Length: 506
Image (cartoon, rainbow, N blue to C red; front, side, top):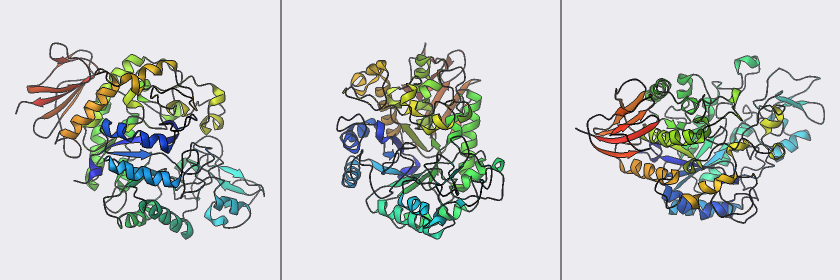
């Protein structure tokens, strides 16, 4: 089986993962030192958010040089060592690539400001912008260059959009792919994968900068590059698309291997909605033969321990629920059940750094320390994404570029290691069992009807996952053994907000 069809992949946000030199910022030295931790956790691969040189106007997604490493993180030589050492402990390495836009400090844009190579970007001459497009970070998507012309940026003004109708842009990115593939990376997560092609004939309301047909030709050419390399290198797309059929087009056999399933991430903790999204996901992926992915948190969204402890457990960028009352004990209980649900579903599962520790969203960061451009561009009405990017606690002390809550000391890796009831121990057990169960990962599933409020299904001939979201305990079906639970059973029944993996009676 292709390794990526059923892999467990761990997202590393390098700036906030592990600090190797004591300056309060995560780096490659820290990550290299923690590779055994990741291997012991039981994941198959790591995905690194951007590690390139960047002014950090948008957390590294404003790339100034696609062929080097941000000096705060380390060097290119260290990156090459990291790839080799990760492979040595059985971990594959996926890196971010950011093709929609670059940094305004990228040499190409600096040349464009001097009047050279402007057609690598979207410039407009005139007294006003050519249309009313809005930035996804808030405010207009057009800013003025020093000479009075306008340039397009769907995100912050420091992130000018590249012009993918220019063959030079296409050739450059194919060269960048080869640069990293030659250094042994196992794949790429493609930022804003749906956004490269724009249709300037359509108004903003039609989303003319998302999911245009021409984008598929780009990924077919990228796939040709990737397929030149052995060892099953892969693409993972980031597309927030409302239409599951159009979403699946990116996953055709000659395009991307997989893409993030954001419908599931945004879904409320409710049995009917979960079943609806799971059915929709499987139905969308089936015609193209691609494996689904299951994601609970990432670097852009509110951590799910916080979401699941609120009265509204869904996620929506348009109404990010900062400072909403959260029952963290309830959120953690549900999170323990949620990882058992996602790891039992068919396909690939992602773990965002720190979720294995049960970390919550840090809502009360001092405003003066917030760095997310969403905070500024929204006029300080959206507190942004810094709260899910606070460095994770290892229990080693030292400074931190964003302050950690005091109670995180009890959630640190050191504090949880050796505690059989901890979230960390739970994740290790779940991931180990997932790897040992032949029926888990890629493959079919069948729903099991255990009554209203219950999400239950079988994998293979004798494995079942039972998640109880009803108001009272649910008896287990006939079984030969309980493999794992997210919390104690009550007289053999599954309590509310609890999951169980069982060996069915054949």
